[in-house]
Image: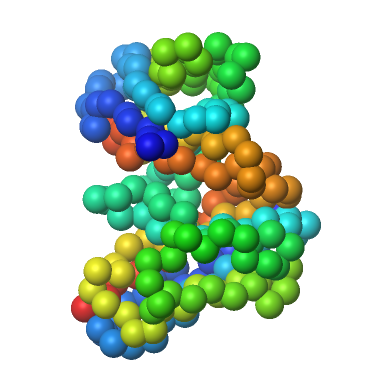
Length: 113
Length: 113
């Protein structure tokens, strides 16, 4: 079964600290993996996208890694800011057909001052 | 570009009433997706249109749900009759091409009492 699992479910950190979110997937065949940020009351916005041949991708203070062998990804946030408070969703694209997206449940991050 | 536009942003209705959600995709995008997001199940694909034609409606929960795309700039998702378990946030997303990056609208928060 094609699944995407994320951990932790929720996380609280202090402003300025770093954190790492985890994603494991069993989606096959795999096309690419995206991390989305979803602010409260808004739609998800793409942060990074990686194909199976890429093992790291950065977007400012956000760095995503991908290990296609172990089917694991992580999103590292450096020097967190209050505006980083959001849900982070790991999304794997199923290759073939119209490239359907398989969503994880998300990690809810709260950054406190 | 204004992005994906959804209306209404919030809808509160009584059980048994008809609900119509509306979406205007980004101009030039030929793929449109309707998703439902709940705390329990996360984001789920309801239906996918390509060039105004429904391609995958396997996610539509039951016959009470229907979706149309009469032209490239407008789509509706209708629930008739609505039930309390339909309460969720409904997102519309569009992409330039099949398999391309999806851009999400702000969502419609539906509450059925």
